[in-house]
Length: 306
Image (cartoon, rainbow, N blue to C red; front, side):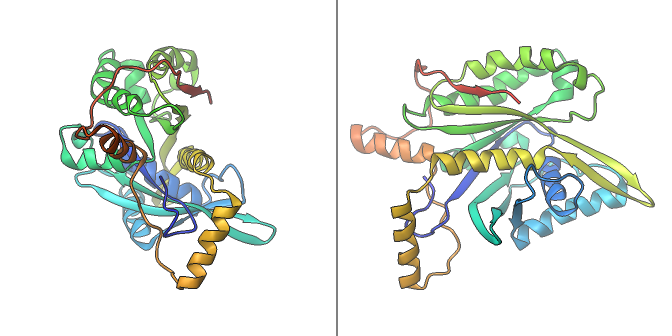
């Protein structure tokens, strides 16, 4: 659950699932470019992301590489953590809707056998799953590999979610700008992905979100022209804020507690949904908590269409 006692504003951890070279780093850089360069506006002009200084530096380096070389940055070799806040302007005032922490991870560590990856899974409140749209349409083996390596992990996560809980998943369709066939293959994409999405059980709320991130020349330099990346983060943020929305009583108590304590600390990044479930299960049954699949439940997942 998001922090309540230590911070008035909820803070969420986002998990990322995707193979090497699927476009996770470019996706993040695209979201930053959309919100800072005016390349593509957010769905609402009253919403924006406020990135911390470390995130601005790391993403700025990736964008600087693109501007200098005209090429996408190389695949991620280490785990990098990015923190930012979704803010909204209303009636002349601004408020922070939630804080987000997203970790850009090498595709090869996306395995339950990796301790660092297991820790990220247990600490997560929601998830971005990355699909290489171009490979999905032209490579007959890609879908099978995706299902075995990535989607199998997602099924395991979904099987751990009990009735009454919701875990939002953004299915990010990357590289939509690299294949001319993508715009004419919406029905085929739906036919390929829907059986996988409908196989998810438990309280999964899922939406497919296409993302395009094209490198374009502007004078003597280059720029990343991104569309859709910021929308994926906003959708996840709104879903999580709605799921974990605090009542007015809790909000006032939290505000009074902060005023009395004089606390100005950063938001607390507490246990994610899956860790809390496993801890509660251990306390109830006495069994050791483990990241393991369970028998599918009958509750259907909630699949949204673009």
